[in-house]
Image 1: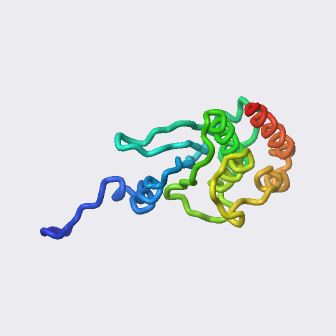
Image 2: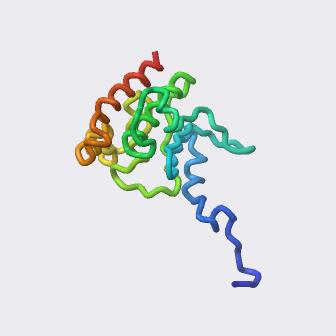
Length: 175
């Protein structure tokens, strides 16, 4: 291990690979709140967060496990679930008086069409203002689950219809 007067020990969260402080600093100094999208092994989590000196404050949150209340029957960790979770977050944020945010995907890889961008697409289609590039969003077929119904019709045969019904149920919350 390096020693000496010039040795600098990195912050704990940086050593653990949990925080990119360069990116976090750029997001925190922005005046808009952040739409934070995180993937776990079983769920998609979306939150609207603002940074304060005492610590970050979560204003609105949505978890893909809540999609069952709206009639969604598919997996809670796939692209349609991310799309619906982003839409649910946007509806709740709009009801809470939030108008827009900037996307924070954390340490997730920014691959075009990824699940974190499916959540972004759901939020944007619900009417939430988030700056983005259209090229990075997944195709509509992927957000509706048509690709899953195509390769696994026995397991997800009616997934596109189920996603459409869930979208209607979530958007009904806005009114």
